[in-house]
Image (cartoon, rainbow, N blue to C red):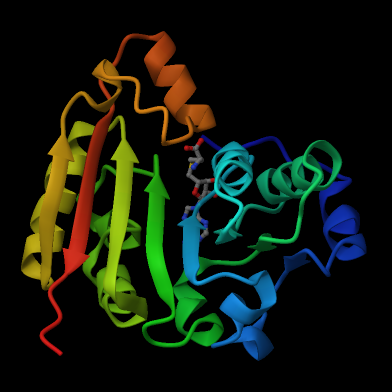
Length: 216
Ligand code: SAH
């Protein structure tokens, strides 16, 4: 679902380019220092930003980088972060396509990658655009720290089932999985905008944790 284009988005993002970066190649390897943390979380496709804002608030010792390629959604997330949350110190945004991840992060730099309600790309010829497809998993594998992991949530059964296979085929092991994650409350984990919508419709939320199998 694409948001209607917001005219104020680009000027707003430009005015706040110390919080919403477009191509932060200089920060590669330096995020933990910048965010003053030992634990770096990256959310890919943050939409309007509720998840990373709530999580950064609930866990002030963790660092958060939220990536969003849609400028209108990113501008809403950026505005919300700046105007509704007081503490900006442990988070930043990147407004760009996550295909460029390797330019912004060092190998082993990220501890947790969050994929929340990623676009399902249902048609077979579009599967390669999925954020859990092989091209992305190869990057995540390199970028995750030794004890790092991916947390994925989705409403989409086909994306979920395919993703389980993608993980297993690309040197990840699934260490936790649920086909009805919100049957229990899980107050430790914030609810995203999409998640709220599907919960209101009484649809199950699929959840998994995938860890890269690293021998060294
Ligand atoms: N995580 C939010 C939004 C889910 S919609 C929530 O749960 O409510 C998926 C979002 O991912 C969209 O905003 C889309 O623009 C973004 N997205 C999809 N592919 C992306 C990519 N390659 N890089 C960055 N963002 C991406």
